[in-house]
Length: 392
Ligand SMILES: *Cc1c(COP(=O)(O)O)cnc(C)c1O
Image (tube, rainbow, N blue to C red):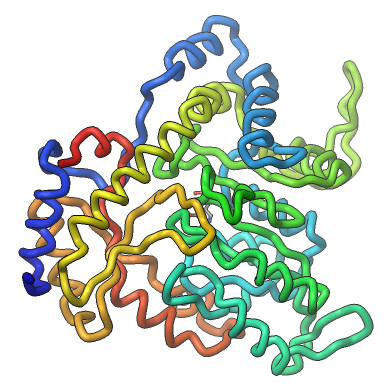
């Protein structure tokens, strides 16, 4: 058995990916399908902007991929989350439960609504919100006020819970849904990293009253930049479309708008790229899973570190593989990041926990011991789909 050293991690990466010549990126997009054809079609026909057949087609493909009634394509994942929260009734002065260990966009979307992120603790195994801890925390901090739940410390309404499927691994979503239902809170799902993942056979993105996807360049499928709002409720879907298209009333030539709204609509050009990406999604997920399996085997004998694997009952898209150091090995975190990046394997730590960022420092939060510990121990490994062709 080897010992955990920065060089041991470099050696294992090199052995797991014999066909990959450094520099190896953390996550690269891939255009191996009809991307060129569909984008050229937009240019040839002049349909490049916010109206066009690819937008409708992209939305239908997403709804099908996520097993849900409606998808509304928007300019990015943050915009999707912003509108999702509005649709769920989140407004100025409300608090929304979000994990502290997530990409900053999750909390930014709350702030864009004039609401306040309320940071909750994550689970060591799946990185998502810890449902059991959240339940007992809400019992302690929450106070019923008619149908509302108030934070007894701030007096503000707690309006929603926003779970995130971190690195593509499904959070404990049914238990979190039960916590939300138990306290009368809306469940808004940040599925930005989890397109193609499912939990007990049900796709991520289909659990929230409203859910959100991202198609940023580093996600499992990309439109350059893009996002989508998902919901089963036809009224919410219609409202999503209205709010994201300047609230224009349908008319052949008149420009009449009935509220101050957003220009969040995804251009046809981007949707064309997205259609080609979704056509290959199932194959991409399979390849990502093969990479994860190769890493799992390669790191199996390394002490004081584990490779993150999908939770029981989950089928993960393994968007970003994560090596998790044991607490005793946390002091090696920086040195491993340095050695791997020096060797041309792009790795990175998890995000700085959001309650430690300047603008969110004073937000309400529960005890975040696990979050802070994980942030010092997670190392994301190169996970581009094309690495499936470089495995041992
Ligand atoms: C990528 C991402 C987003 C936002 O996506 P953008 O398209 O970059 O705005 C939101 N939440 C999480 C967890 C993400 O990873």
